[in-house]
Length: 435
Image (cartoon, rainbow, N blue to C red; front, side, top):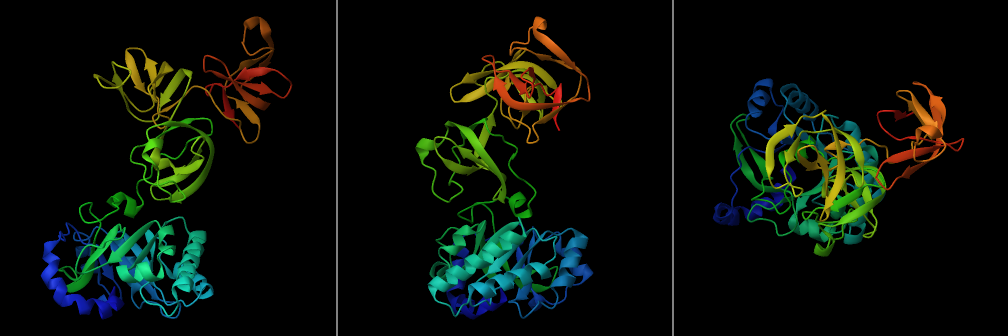
């Protein structure tokens, strides 16, 4: 970033010697653009699209100074379909001014921005006060947006003045023009002398590819276009992936906890990393991101409607494809069976995965928040949970509403609801829906 040249020029000589000893070739640019690059033209930005994966654009130099050309440039990025993130060059001196600066930054920013960045590289505060101010900026921004928040600085400053506060951010962008940073980072500003022919200018450029960073995120992550499946429910069982790195609170996931099944006992919506949901796993007693688990239907039988395409396997371990697959939307009859720590649905001719994100099973497992169901088709109330024809007590016509007080599970895995008048009705999706 432009102001960092004050420290960067001191490294120029060393950079020239060392820069080519590391992998710094960018397939596409991730340039840092501010008023120093001028008021961009339609022709320049149109050409830039083929040269940049995304752009990082300065919005302000603290509360008191708005970048001269950010609005013009951002409008052109939108016009030509160039993704961009927005940054605030920090000048705050306390938690109060940090909050005020975040509010002003968000108000000034184009809401098409894919993510927001705190550029924190100079401060008159001590370490403790600086960390508190950075955290205050983060908290204020998090109250304003669910988009990703990125921390930017050069390594020595980051570790000195924001070493604890920077950990809260969704990713870190570290500048070092002579060698790869030795702290965790997902974006590396490796040069201030990258020539962009579309602009006819030299710019700061960064890398995010897996060979250049210590914490890799794909392009889809930066652009906010891909999230893990995030519609898990209490009562489902979750398999914790081997790739899980940390719990939501930031503590490491031990190897002994991975590749095991846990029951989901709570859930909450939150946008972080590649997840829009957290689930609480009994036994671990930890919140984990939805991206780190696969949830399974357990003990169910009946009909399953596929949410995604599913391959059919001849064996329960899903090692041997039969060559047949089922399209999204297909309804299959089957029964859930277990193999090791995982679950499958046994259907005619073989097995498919029992992952929740692949199929929607026949029965509701949870209570509607309103405690009210609406009949999708006509069905009966029963005196007992067994639903014998001789135990029918009343007909519930299509369109009618029923108040329920609880949901139960039979040994076969099927579910039923108990009604407010003491009877029992089906929990099949095909018969009832939440009102």
